[in-house]
Length: 323
Image 1: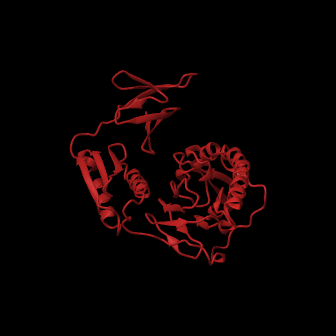
Image 2: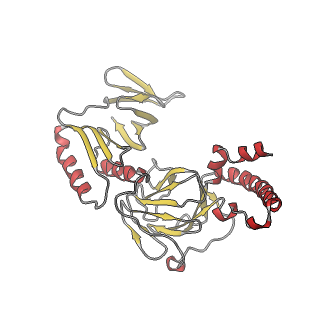
Image 3: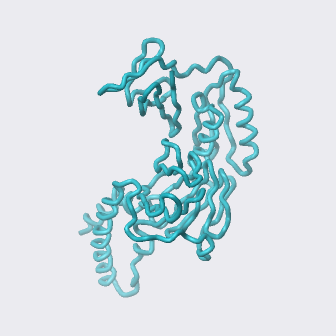
């Protein structure tokens, strides 16, 4: 019995326990939902997102959800390319983040969402601790069987993207959640806090300035952020614009810059042609032929080969080569 209990709370089960349901309760996609697994999930109109929602005034990468595998912890909502309206009327602007709890609602563009834990923290509490050891063991066994049944259903749900919601759901009224715990938390992160939301915001800004092919961003263990790589002479004004933007973000972590100037920044070879047969391939200058899944210079991975264009991805950012 103890071995079975230990396996129940292994890392795989923790990932299932930590899942959340993201319901679209208002807008063009009302009545759809998806399971959000522990880790980071981006939502917006860009094909680079984990969840793609077209229309509803959504931005390319509108927001990101950081889900912890521990169902007792909240979910971090980070506004990327667009703002989010929270349950008590506060607005989460680009670059800001807050913590959601199960059942909280928010709006992005003209779409509204509800976030619900697959297994809520209160479901894991043993109600009668003072009733004695026998009662406690019985409660744990009963809870284990209940969780196994619920988790199998959660796993089946998690395989579908934006599965239809069976029950009709009314779009949430933002002011109807007076007990919501949404508190914007703009500023430098506390020691040990996840810096990933900042990383994604910077990547999105570099993409806006067309600097993503030569520059990368990473979080350092000391709580700082690092931007590194190379830019060409003609990109220097864009780099200066990025620095002015970053300096204006109050409370952001210290930025470490390891950026080389000069040259043409010809990191990626020029695309010459594509072949769209059963095994798509792309021909580049210098006699290079590559296929989907191959890694190009600069750690760019080919994720799609289409008519007259190749899509590459690195660190969650995408760029397109055409000819």
